[in-house]
Length: 154
Image (tube, rainbow, N blue to C red; front, side, top):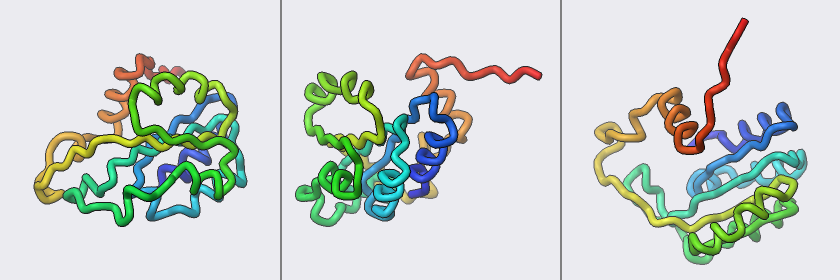
């Protein structure tokens, strides 16, 4: 649980010519709801905030998010000042709308219901994605999205 939404907002403001896509979780967002108002105030037109809602804290053992089934994150985002906010429970509905969402000016908030993947091992004993370095994660994300890493030349 970190400050990725604040980082994404700063990145979007610093790089206005690039689309910035943030993948967040409801557990993380609930611990820092104030970031929604901050993003809305700065209104980066290139920020797309996707929040994955699995209704639990999957990383730490699957503890349920209190009142998870009744929280309307899109309504919260709109209330904080996001001009555009959406919620999807079905992959088909999201797939049918994602292109038009990405064509809209930001900030845009999208809440997506997902099925949790819970590993009940203690955090220190987990393998897989929790043990990857940032470089490995970025490499995997770029490969998945078909993005070539920028080359650094002097």
